[in-house]
Image (tube, rainbow, N blue to C red; front, side, top):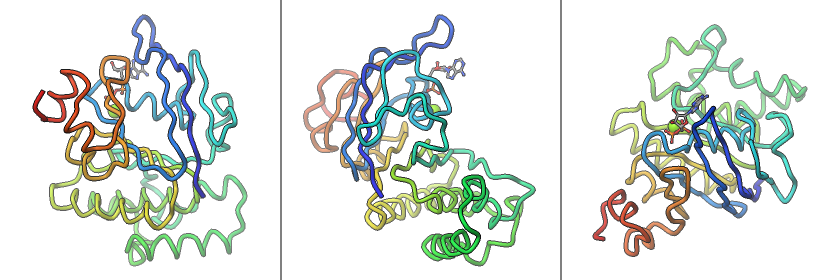
Length: 239
Ligand code: ADP
Ligand code: MG
């Protein structure tokens, strides 16, 4: 379950503010790509456009070669994980994980099997009957990741999923996400403003700044050969 994603000349404005200007990017299937850039540079907006949570003003987004920027979010084969978890507080962990699948009428036995498998993988089996309020931040984020996993998406979209975790948990969850990618082979797009996360997770890093892409490359390439002064400053490499 993996997908290529093509972004072609995508522009996005909020009122008079241009957030993304004619941005183009091709992500091959199975890649772990990290969008890295300072706060406010449009990372979340781009991710939300891929997910269908934000409209595209002009340009196209294709998944596996098919244009999807006019398709409803549920039909794009992607699953998003948010920094703030976005779990339903009144539902148990199990029901949170099942929720999106019921909507697309997956059979109950299939839902249960997928939840069991994801819970095993993420070590949250003992939490299934709890509500989000009874979980730690780290546990909530594992549930949010599990909720994405059960959808069996072709691409995962992570929006700063580790930012609310303490340092030790951040490192652990980062390693687990890398393992998840190895196991599931899905395409993963991971948004962060954290250079270390980008360097350790990415097959390729897309450095964004000020409405556009500054550089795309493998971590060591970006580090050793920053294309612009901005990239050099931002990844902490010598200019
Ligand atoms: P990042 O995720 O890189 O921090 P965002 O994509 O969230 O950046 O935001 C990019 C810019 O767009 C920011 O200036 C932000 O204030 C603005 N923005 C984002 N969403 C909206 C919105 N719904 N309405 C108006 N402005 C927005
Ligand atoms: Mg953001």
